[in-house]
Amino acid sequence: MSGKDPELSRLGEALSSARSAYAAAKKTTDETKARLNQTGSMIQTFNAKIAELKKGIDSEYNAMRSERAGGDRNAADGHREAAQSMQEKLTEIYESKKTCFTELDEARAAFNKALDSQKILRDKVQEAWDSFNARLEFLKTENAKEQAKWKEKPCRICGVPIRYNVEWKHIPNLCKDCFDKDKLNWEDRVCAKCGKTFRINKSWEHIPTICGDCRKTVKAEKAAKIQAEKAAAEEEAKQAEEERQAAASALVEVANEAMSEEMPVAEE
Image 1: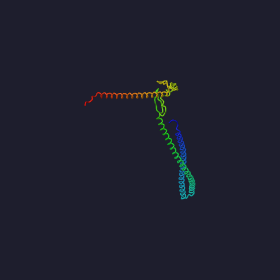
Image 2 (image 1 turned 45 degrees about the vertical axis):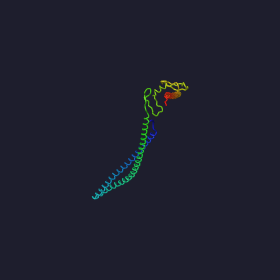
Image 3 (image 1 turned 180 degrees about the horizontal axis):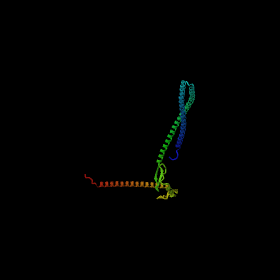
Image 4 (image 1 turned 135 degrees about the vertical axis):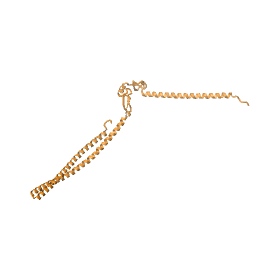
């Protein structure tokens, strides 16, 4: 692939942008998930405290009843007050837990929203990636086709490989060094026939004295002359053949007449 493909660059930028948006969405999802987990942990902590307080309250009430049964009202009152204190704490924890459930619902809603957004952006990343890869494969195929047009041939003078494209209108026969040297052999000459200037190469075995147009004219005139001479020769041969055939016919007639004169006349 020669150069930078604008469409591939555009698709690459779109892919990078989609990945950045997905990374930001994933970060938001992770943050909301952490908030959700933290709220869930708080609820679990509240549940543990609630279970512990309930157990303590039951223990205090049992102790209160035991003390009352034993007749120690002061001790019983102490256990009752402890149970009531624990009940107040239990009520506070229930209120905090209730608030925490509201926070949990908000955190879960935020997490689900972030997760949905992340999934949408993940699909966009995949679409951008597919488009980028499709363009890349297309360019690879086109590049392979373009590379197939390039061939090599040896320099006519030194044999060094010359790389050329089969679609070039003029395919070089000389490498650059030999071409530069060969330019020194070229010079202008004046046509001996029409006076126009034309170029010749001093390394040619036969250097012309007339320009290409005049050479074409001379060649055409020579061809016309040869054709005319051929036609004249054919006409002369035809006439000679006709004369030969006429002479042969005359001889046959003379011979027939001679034979007629020599034949004896039949007697009656």
